[in-house]
Length: 73
Length: 258
Image 1 (cartoon, rainbow over the protein chains, first blue to last red):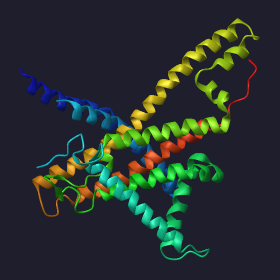
Image 2 (cartoon, one colour; image 1 turned 30 degrees about the vertical axis):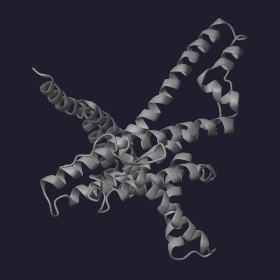
Image 3 (cartoon, each protein chain N blue to C red; image 1 turned 90 degrees about the vertical axis):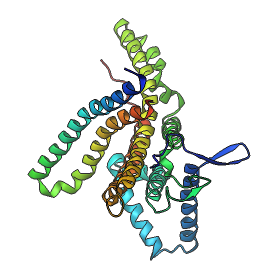
Image 4 (cartoon, each protein chain N blue to C red; image 1 turned 180 degrees about the vertical axis):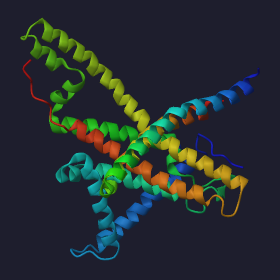
């Protein structure tokens, strides 16, 4: 296998594997937020910002693997 | 199809400094703030109306948002110059990247305007500024040795000499933990800068690719997503800076008797 095909495969694999756990994490965060809103619909305004913050932190891990993909060549 | 490169393109020179297209965008954002600031200052009123009212409303919303972290309006007001300016600068440079002209106007074959946060130099500089500002505020608030004691815990070690061997052992372990905290500070800088850079750069690549594939109205949902992402990333950066500042200026715990 030559260098270029290895690089291409690794780029795809990095992003694919690196995106699994952040996806689960964001799903769990938002699911918990939905549950909390379901129990107490008036609290949805207070819940929105912390949920968004938590989702941004979890997404940052996927962004790290994206940056690694950019640096591969 | 022109996917933006990781390194921003150099457009010219001023003396020995390379002028890149992201630098032009950053200067544009700073210029806009300057002009708006001077406009508001000239016609400042105790009963606001018009543009001053609009910005006071935004500032009020921002301070409520920051109050969630600090819990204290006085502390928010103290940190507002650092955190608020970081927030507005990142927000404006992200949103300026969506205006028509970014990416299409060329200068000598290269893009003239490019979103400022797609430049790793800028994001690392802002992250360094935030983390170093938190340390400086910590030194100013808690005192030089008390703050240094949080990391290299020599004061705890010295105090524990009179408590016996177990306390000395605990103090040594805490000293190693404190040194590991220093590595955590470097991780903070990396995570702040890479999060912002990755989000904005990935959005830019996405929009370039979609615009090359399909024209007309199809890139519009992606540009709306970019709008939202710009806002969220600015607020996350500002919120994290505020958290670091608040934690650094927290009062030290008193000595507890075991």
